[in-house]
Structures are given as structure tokens and as C-alpha cells.
Length: 98
Length: 504
Picture (spheres, each protein chain N blue to C red):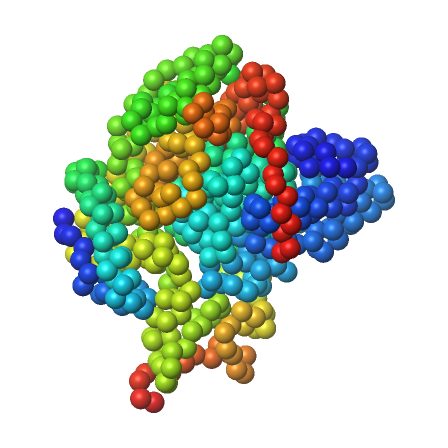
């Protein structure tokens, strides 16, 4: 099983959209290496014959009638928004240089 | 009227029904207690004084008018701040949600409102329920009423401490790997994780969706059963909600019978790593159950030793996905870096500022376990281990009607003691995690005080999925036998809390 190093953590932090300082990356890499080391045995326990369990109580697809139920009003949906305009969420630029 | 706060929810409900006490008096007594001691305990992040008293006054009026009321109408309750409530803030213990108010109520909160139970406020927790000590709250740790220098467990340390400090007779918690049961164990209170899907999770802020469960927190087994019946049952808003009826849990707690039942001691959940005082109290509980006519058998669950590892792959994987929604767009914190940043930079800055260390650790760990090349080895393997743990439970329940173990390997440790060692912190959940992985229900009740430190020890009962009633049936017997040996409830032995006014 692969080790986890500082570069990995920097890459993962970018994927997870969390800015990290150099100090944080160093510390996190050390902590995660210990954690990963202690849990990696899990990958060696079960053979190919063991099916995976994703959900503790088996359920088949759960559907409801396709009718409008309780919904939030436009105002309620925007209540906690950091910014909004014209009844919509207002978002910073998505592309650079525009 | 200070003794109103020492009554069980059941006893208080009777006094309310007979009009010996009004709901306003009962609610005010708890608000006064919060005011007096919560500066020391820090169990509450928000106190809901006005609304709680209004609801109580409504109950008193309805009772005077002769209306039919729910048996718990007027009995106040605290709600873990991971569960959304209209009219009060919900923070999940995180700066990223500081000041946020939900536009809707969780289903369990709706049910509390329907039963007309005054909500006293929102209780402290590890940020997004990630932790075993409540030290990961962005709003300061909760302190254990038994010793203010010690942790109250976690993540639901606020709910457990509130109930242990007589600030509320009842509380709601959530349990993903033990966050109801372990705080119950270290504070000398009762906590129940129902069968997965037995209580709706609509409005519980998600950590790990295949593991999360809402459940009751109380001082007695019967009180948990009463609350469980209020909140349990099918909910169309939660597609994982079971359609089964909630079951006769209160009846089971009142019946309290173990004669002829087979109680299985889990071999793997004792011995090395368990504190001596925990094991001594645990053995005494077994003797008491045997004396009441239960047959004590030993069962082996060999794959439980991989449970912690599987949990620390599945939980962070699901959490990293669930927490992606905190992006500074639709709700919560938004941090805008200097210049004309794109949304991507805003997200990175927002999540850096809004999340604490433990949340970041788990998001990174989950992102790692789910990333290309590792998915099969980590997340996939952990899901297979989950199957093995379910098989262990199935085999054990062939030999026993309920299983028993210590709830946590140790009593409450000192604040700060494990904060810099995440792995040591994770080990607190070693006995509670298997139930979440398998979806089976579990209950923790006080088992006495450890000789070496005089702190509470928890005893955990586990039952097959959908057999929650068995927990109450056995738990009530053990509780009454233990209380006979103690000469009263365990919490009667807790020290007086130095009164430091809260001012929330």
C-alpha cells in the first residue's frame, strides 16, 4: 500500500478545495501517514469472494409519486446565501480574466 | 422548585399531566439551571428561552382547556446542533455555518413540536460531529459535569453533559460511530443509537450517510424509550427511513425482563486496551444479569478488529463528499481573497477559514481513499469488511438475543490529552463502531464508577436490526439492579457543579 506524503496532501487539498499553508501541509502529511498506516490492513482482509456492503439495511429503490410536495419559497432558499441578486444566488466569476 | 430538574422525563410528565407542576415552571427551572451552570459546562451553543416558554405556556393553556395532549407535552428537551431547527441557529459546531439559520425543521424537530415539547436550545458538538471529545467544536469544548477538566465524550458531548448536569431531562443526539453512546458512557447517562433508518435523518446535517443515525439521550432507560417513540417511524422525506412501525419500546422498558434470555459477551471487545475499572464494573453487570435469570454466553466476532480501519475509510470518504456542499455559494461562510478571484479560489479560501483541523483531516483522508487508483484498495475493501462484520453479528445473534460489551475502553480522559494524537482519539470508538457498520441498534447505560478514578463507566447492549425493543427490555433490568446496589441513580453521586453563569 502506498505511503502518503506531503505532495500527495497538497494535491488532495487542491482537489478538495481547501487552501493549506506549508505548516499545515507538513503537519497533515505526518498525521495522515500514521492514520493510513494503521488502517491499510483493511485492504488485505477480505477476498474477492466477499461482496461489498454499501448500505447496512438492504433497500430497493425508493420512489414517490411525481407530484409537487413541500418546497422552499424563493425567499427561503436564499435566506442563508452569502450573496444574491434578482432572486438568484450571486456567484464570483467562474472563469479567470473575465 | 429546583427539584424539578432532577426528575426523570417520565416523572416530570406525570406531574405535568396531574397539573401538580406547569410546563412553564418545568421549562423555567431548566432555563434557570442552564443560566446557573452552563458557564462551567458549555453544553449549549444557543439557548432558546423565548420560544421554549411560549411552547410551555401553550401546553399549560391546552391542558387547562381540557385538550388531549401527548404524554411528553411540556417536557423540555435539548437538541444537538447538528439537527436543523427553524427560528434558531444551527452551526454543526463549525465556523463555516456560524450565524446560519435553517429555512426548515428536521423531521425529528417537527415531531418534538407536534408533541409540544419545549426546545431549550442547541447543544455543543465536535465540528460536523467529527470527534470523541467535543474538543473539535469551533465554539470551545464542553466540560464533563463529573470533572470539569475532563472531556464529556463526543461528538455529542453537549447533549450528554446537558442531561448529566440536569440542564435538560432529555436531548437528541446523532451517532455515526458512537457519538451518542460514548458520551453517555463517560457522563453516566443513557444514550441509544436506533436501528439504521429507524429514525428519520431528514434535517440532520450529514457526515457519513451510510452510518449516521439520530437517537435519544436521557438519564434513564425508560426516558430514552419515551423519546425514541416520539421521534421514530417512517418519514417520506428520508429515503433510507424504514417503513416498519416504531415498535412498543416504552412497553419493553416498563416490562424489563431478562429471564431465559441469552446475553452474549463479545470476546473481542474486552481485555487489552480496556481500563481495569471499566472491566471490573462490566463483569459486575454480567453477574447481575445472570442473577436475574439471563444466560450469559460468550460470542466471538473475529472481524471486529478490522472495524476501526474500515470505519476510518468509509466515514471520511462519505464525509468528504457530503461536505463538498460548503462552498461559499448557497449558504454559510464566504471568504473572498484579494483581487478578483474566481469561484475556485473563493472556495479554497472559504473552506480553509471555515473548517477546523479534524474536518480538514477527514476530508483529505476521504479524498485520498476515493481517488483513482486507491478506490478499490481502500473504499472497496472497507465495504467488504463491512460485510464480514455483518456476518459476525449474524452468527453472534444465532447464539444470543442481545450482545453486551463495555461502551468505551476508558473513562473520561483529560481535556487536551489526546488532541494532538488523532489515532488515540479514534480508538475511543472501538466498541461502538461495529454497530454503525452493521446498522444494528445499540444502547449505553451507566455501569458504575471505575475504582481508580471514580468516573462513570458505560455498558453497551446491542440487538439485531429492528429489534430495538430488546435493548430497552434488558437495559431497564440492568439499570434497576445496578441502582439497587448504588442506593439510587448513579448521577446522585456526581459532584456539585461550581456555578458559573452562562450568558448565552
